[in-house]
Length: 395
Image (cartoon, rainbow, N blue to C red; front, side, top):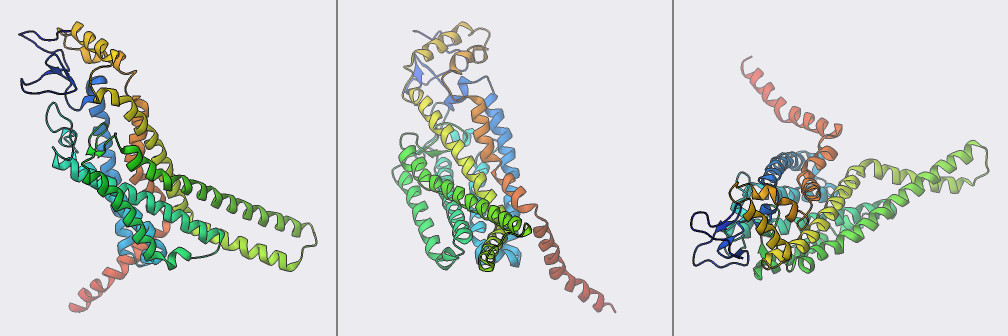
């Protein structure tokens, strides 16, 4: 199949390759430009989606920055029990900060040149951004796991065991996270495959990224469920005891006391910690959706990244040739390629969930009346003495 002629060698969106350029995404002198996946959707669609999501991520970053500052500045937020939430939000801040590597110019991360997608070897920004994203993702999941475990032990077992071994838990979290970050970095397996960022190469992403994360996500989910079951049983017991007492049922005083103490303890914990419980649910759901999306996308795109050999690609290129003169082949032929690339609705949902993480966390933590009241007291305590000093100076 010959694609070239002297006047206009390649149909859009394909571009002519230099004489000395060889690539698995080139055929008969015409190449799919970087980033490859964008060319299989209607023109500009993917860029527009990621531009909007970049703006959302910047807003999310700002929201999390407020939360982090609150935990660093306000004295009540620096208690040891709140430190896990602080570290979680600091990691989320780094996770969202990678947006600034590519905002306004996605190709700065995605592409080494017009023909080649980025790897940590041909694009330094890709390597740095990938390391930060991998490390912050592991830290997010592990701190989330730690938070869920702490809430479960505190709620169900009435123990602060993790707070007693807080430093040990921190060390374990960092060792695991750094290990799974350094391995792909040392083996040069940080690349751009699809999406907006560089991550662990699709060839090793399952054993070195998704499955290790799932090792903590899946137990965390079931521990979370067990915590809620315990809460529900306790509330049911309280309601039953109250009903029995109101009906005059004979119940031993020791039994009522035990149930009431236990139930009150649990309800007090939930009253204080419900925000942390909701936070972990949001993160677990976001991770699960994005993991499924990424694995499916990797499987769909692997034939393309390994070479233009699939029959549908030949059909797609032939369609581009038919519409070569009108230069609208990408939009006219998208019906062929859209069957073989990630569904755009699934892409939007998965990417939006990660972009909205900061806003979601802010709605859970940053809008509480207690937090706003603490800021008010902090401002009064910090600046009221300045006003007194200024008034006394001129008296």
